[in-house]
Image 1 (cartoon, rainbow, N blue to C red):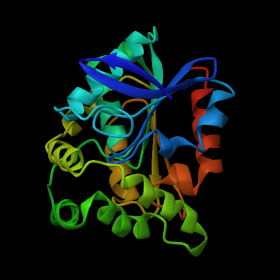
Image 2: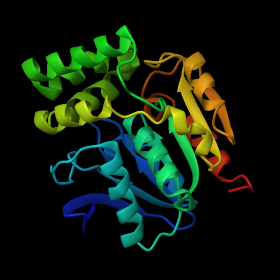
Image 3: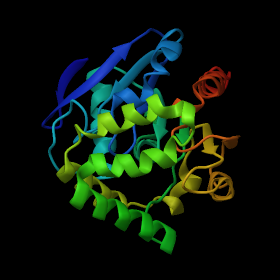
Length: 261
């Protein structure tokens, strides 16, 4: 892993492969490790940049932890690496960062892959409020590792996913409770749904059959992005990049290879 100083913080990142750049953005409480099953496959055809967002992994824990700041950090990282534009792949919260990047600096985003995410995380219904408050309560009482124990069972429920579940929980033990809660607070205040029609990048929206939000909901908002298509991963849960890596890699690489990109 390499490190670089941008926007007043030290950011850890992986930079490997050659070709058109691809930026992989992890979710809340995650790190570059979430993309371990994609890095080798993608690096065979692309230059792959895999950072830890501020507050997580090997990057500094320094506020603000807003989606807007994460987007500014990622644009600064690409600039520091002399990358004018990149394909941006975001998972969950990373998808929010990817959307924010596409809206703020459209010329720098060649395409978007939005995986098990949403264009807004505001607490607009009781399901979202319940999930957010449960995470807050678990984090306060049991720490982020406690959150991971509960959510890990939902994300990796199958018997043969024990290793994935254990690795997910182990990774969470290195996450700061303060950074997690501060990021969760700002995430639930972010909403860009009214701006979806302004996204100009070709977009692939991936939705797992058993994600926290339904495929119907993802189809609804993805239809408002001018150049978007939707793909549902049957049998998959929130971490499609890990529970369905072969299909994920195949779908994303085929999307990135389209002539329009």
